[in-house]
Amino acid sequence: MAKVRAIADVLQRPGVKLLDLESDAYHNRSVITFAGEPEAVAEAAFDLAKAAVGAIDLNHHQGAHPRMGAVDVIPFIPVGGVTMAECSEVAEQVGKRIGEELHVPVYLYAESARVPQRRKLPTIREGEFEGWAAKIKDPAWQPDFGPAERHPTAGCVAVGARGFLIAFNINLDTSDVSIASRIAKSIRESSGGLMNVQAKGIFLEDKQRAQVSMNILNFATTPLYRVFELVRMEAERYGVGIVESELIGLAPAQAFMDVASYYLRLPGLSRNALVETRIEES
Amino acid sequence: MAKVRAIADVLQRPGVKLLDLESDAYHNRSVITFAGEPEAVAEAAFDLAKAAVGAIDLNHHQGAHPRMGAVDVIPFIPVGGVTMAECSEVAEQVGKRIGEELHVPVYLYAESARVPQRRKLPTIREGEFEGWAAKIKDPAWQPDFGPAERHPTAGCVAVGARGFLIAFNINLDTSDVSIASRIAKSIRESSGGLMNVQAKGIFLEDKQRAQVSMNILNFATTPLYRVFELVRMEAERYGVGIVESELIGLAPAQAFMDVASYYLRLPGLSRNALVETRIEES
Image 1 (cartoon, each protein chain N blue to C red):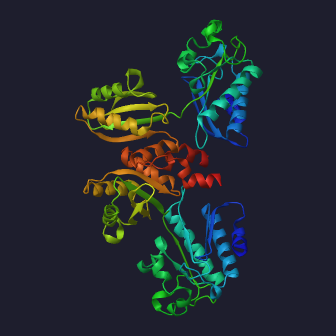
Image 2: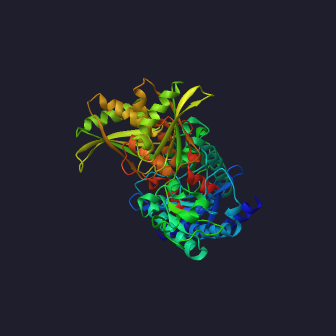
């Protein structure tokens, strides 16, 4: 933990706000979340990567969570007035510097991927640190930046822009978890439903209710209201209604502006219509 | 305008953001909108009042807009994480200082009113500057702060907390403005509808559509979704549907969080669930 904290200390600078630092001994993995204007975030992300590459040797690392690098993945996520395109620009800049200055192979992933097979992190990470010594010799796995050779201690890293992940659950007025599972199956990407939606049915012991538990990976293209209405529609097949929904953690303001825009038939409603945005930007 | 700008210059200080300054020669009236943390806003509002009282003599003032004071009204409006109660505290503090230090009679109005007949500004303002010399002698019109005598040049002032006014219009799929007028009548406070809603029917020349044009004076107690659904319901009586709605100007984020909370059945959804709020407060 002293090592992790020393790395995170890199973020103590103007223009960057540390939002969260989560470490888990079992997974032997730390997630550092910070925010700021694109330029400050780019600088900080590079310095953070540099500190981690200097401090962590994956040859002596074990943990339950799959990983391919000392810095495993750096996602840049648009919030506030920042766009996905701006995040992708930052990802390219930071990726280039990590490759050239730290000599760690960089793979642009998610919205920044240059080829379809690099969009999903698990595909890139397959083989993990140990397997990457050989995997990188495959012409299909030439890095986007940096040397075509696994860094001896830091492995390689995925860098890219991606949407804010929203954890959104819907509780049904039934205790039959098989109904929640069937609804989940009909609405999720992996079985023919909505793109960018992961879903499963679970049983809530405390409430004795079945729940459709979801991750929405891109609310801009797959908005909350569409997910909600599709779950409602599928639930009707079983004579089941929706009791309530819940948000786990946070979501960007625009996700809810999109919901209000749909139900109030208010086209183009955005953060720019908020007095808070006007105050922030004045 | 030089006088108005000199008064507004008082706001050039840290902790306060000037959002808008609107002056109108016909009404001979200026509206200065600014924002900040409660303490900074209280200080700035007092200094602004002091500057205006020093610069404006209502004995030599004429304009189309009714007015009773050099500073006519000071509304404190909750935005961001600030509550109505905090705004009312600020109103009391500022009102007390204006009464005691500037010797201008102060009337607490809107949410800060201590008696029901002081809730509405037009009731207080009745008689205007000229009439107030006598009106203030009436025991029912003893000021909440300051001397029981009209200030010789600055008159008197209403100070209070009130909700953010949202200008919200709904366009119908008919050109029959009489239908919009009947819907407006059925949903507005003044004719038995929803509290805090002003509404009228108008005809949109450019779109050849009838519109229900509304002001929502307190979205916390009378949320946008309830207004929208009531308009939809009343429109159905005439076989008329809603084409779209529109927001004129700005609204606070919570107004749309309340809409999303209702339609997604997501209880207690607030600004605290926004990543932007977390960043702002970290």
